[in-house]
Length: 331
Image (cartoon, rainbow, N blue to C red; front, top):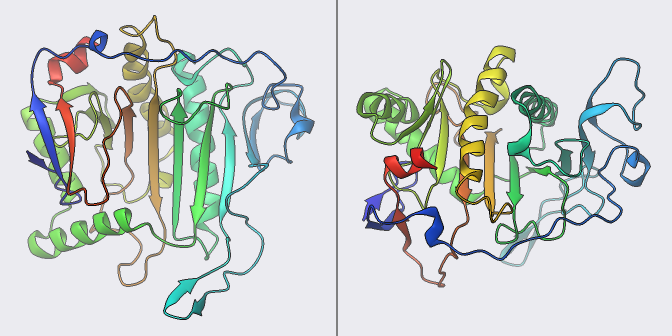
């Protein structure tokens, strides 16, 4: 068993060197070739864009873009309105105020994120940062999550075009609040950042390292919940993903590109392998404060969904196959 130092969660691991990508089996997901609202020239089929990276001279909500962010046509949360916090007896309720956006990563229907050039991935990251900065200016937002699901097991069975999604919440999820509290308590005890200490240990030991450049380190977390799970940490202290500069955006794109492309090779017969990627940016949390010197939460995590996640109402731990660093490098 291994304990996740960031959450206190335990993971039951089966330590083995025998597991290989070929040991997993998938249901192939065929890319739809019918009308797609996210393809270039179909811009009128989506809500008006809130951000886009465009060629000089191109017009908003028309062709000529490389990355485009639009509100979700069927949003779980809406940006308009007041929070309307209220009590319903012993229970709490509020209006469904927040943000739910689609970030279209490429105008081309037949290309996935791992098939983009590094400078194109950098444009996607720039769009992430721009949307985070904009939403962090909204005092109602306490937490912004960017996530990407690729493949049927990850939940991307209805959209073939390569997209990410963004959700801005007026509350901080319990799992994120736990990480903030753990990091705050660690700093109070040791006067050091927990994330920076873990980063330094990974750099010293280099047992779980996957990729590295001047600004970022990709490694297999000590207590991974999924086989071939990968975390990307900045080498500099960073309390929010939205605070990286232009040069660091390029470095992050490079640190993502190499592992993502490598992952496709063992599963070439299954090009729609399920993969979830998440990036977090914390805003205001009452009683904890905006992340600063006590925490470093501007991190990125990728989880290939190679197997189902057993669940139970009383789950105390996750169970997974612990993949050694060598296998992560092999893929």
